[in-house]
Image (tube, rainbow, N blue to C red; front, side, top):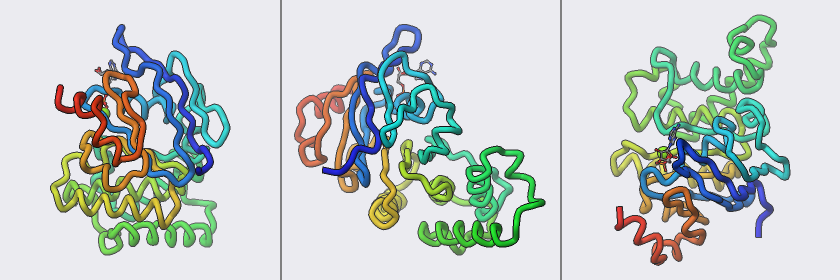
Length: 254
Ligand code: ADP
Ligand code: MG
């Protein structure tokens, strides 16, 4: 049994009387590739927004490496070692892949967008180290040959990779991925799944992955939590989840 990295306990949050999260609890162990799945509207994105400090739950607790995160600002949570990607790709279209990655890294290390823009005063050595790091990340994600290309015209699947690379440039201990294969074709999905597995095993980054597509997560995750209408209806290994009656009903019941 691995040590607990993220402990979610009894999270509840309502929007205008609708319980988006209803007493959700689970624990992500260090090194896990942990998936949260569920039909549309199940509360997956809400859960992510709670963990990254964008939403404040009404009750419950979110502990990261033993520390309570509830009430911390999003940038503090990022500094604590939690990076996230978003469901929709959000990049600056005119920037090159290299610039995007450098900006993400500087922003994180300097904690503040203005500081990141100011190039003066930063030592050449620091600059070279950052460049080396983003180049390594890009190469690992198969983006090495695209470093000098503007992000805007790149295909959707490649942009999703850039988004993943951006979050890895922050050297997170925990990576939150919101629907990393949304809008991807079959081949791109398979490639992304392989990359996620590699980042998890080779870089040792613990992952919490939110996906709508059940079949995509089954091959890569080691634990699966299933949400439906804000409630946890199952928490098990992928092999048991696919046989779980409540899970099958939630997916087939629409
Ligand atoms: P998922 O990501 O699993 O598709 P969400 O977390 O986006 O689900 O949504 C869960 C429920 O909460 C849905 O009923 C949705 O309409 C509602 N919801 C989510 N965010 C908001 C919000 N900002 N304002 C009002 N309702 C919201
Ligand atoms: Mg969502």
